View 1 (tube, rainbow, N blue to C red):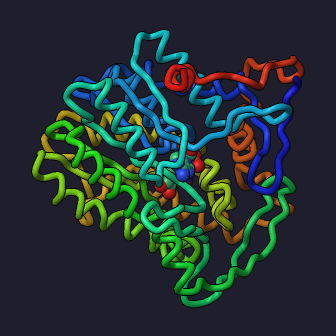
View 2 (view 1 turned 30 degrees about the vertical axis):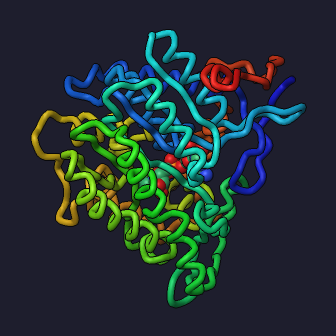
Length: 403
Ligand code: NAI
């Protein structure tokens, strides 16, 4: 079939297999150009491994450190006329490339919040890996979570706290800029968002892995957070999602205590705002990202997920120094370029000026749209989008595990 993008709001309901795989290959090439880490991780579990920061972490570990990887994700395979999800094709592409290089790579597709998927993952580690995992990357972004103990369903929301918030926002595809007013969150909204996107599940993963004795001595675990500028505080850092990130960051402190028994360490890395499926869903943020990209590209400071994670691995987690550099709150900051005062001053100035008429010239909306298409395997160079292609693609290790 011929696969074209079908965009509905902030999501694309189709994905292109060759485009996704090619874009994984581009990330692999980037990592290869940066050479091997001398003291990188050897056995890496990535939870949320199929898109965005988690996929980049898997690629950086495998191709930047020759690490064996197990990736956990929640993706859909193709069915009839429906294509698979982008993360499915990305994972198929990743496994193919890993196999070609003789690298161990297996994947588990299912709800990472569940006890069942945790147990399956542990079983696989026990079966395949001697000596345990030495890096656990926790990179889930989900709108909901079924609690494994109570079965209750929790929904994460993106709302301000205390009072309603009015701001500029953009309809990315039409380029229309308008004001949006977001009502304040209820206590229940806050609690639910913390339950979905806070640290409880990360803690459950580490507890389960520790109890099963599948973590290596000196293990590191890392989760990703965001702070951003004052401009987005009401919707991000001081909103419902910010409360969840506070909880995630506090969880790292608990995990540090838990893991001290095996000389392990837990980190939260504050990453740059980037176009991913998760960030596209946040009101206000896509307009901020379009302006940020414009400024950072002009200053030659722009990075995507893979550039960020390579820097995280090379300069922070595995730099060879005895201490991982962190800020006063104990956070790794790879949002340092985004938060440079000159970058933020330029973005604020553009924010005041931007409207539907000038958005194409003063922001990088074109770059945002391109990146958004690329998330789903479209607008990837070298791909013939008029050619027939087969939407059913298998992920090698998933087949092995079923058979
Ligand atoms: P993403 O949407 O690209 O990736 C989410 C991943 O989670 C995918 O692999 C998906 O399959 C997996 N997933 C979702 N629900 C699942 C479930 N129930 N079971 C198993 N897997 C599941 O998201 P992105 O943007 O890479 O976010 C990852 C982390 O990075 C999040 O904590 C996010 O807050 C953080 N972050 C993102 C930034 C951004 O601008 N995109 C900036 C800084 C931090």
